[in-house]
Image (cartoon, rainbow, N blue to C red; front, side, top):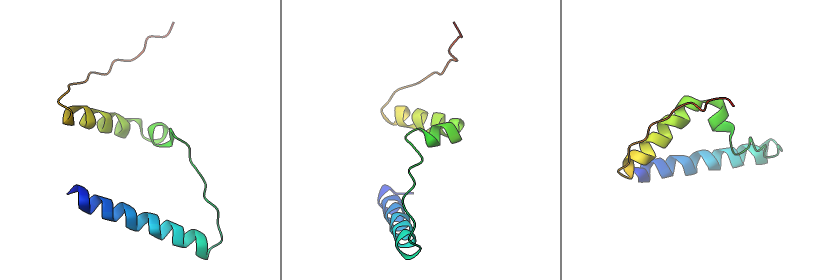
Length: 67
């Protein structure tokens, strides 16, 4: 999908959420900075890998050994 099309979809979803909050008198509930990482860590790894690859980098993830 082209970036422009993706941006338009994000904007549309944001507008729909805003309209829902206004019409149903609900407040914004921030899930936190690390919600997506905690919720779906494999997706976060794929995103990080893709971003690094786009920059021409190769990444390797290794688990941290407990002390």
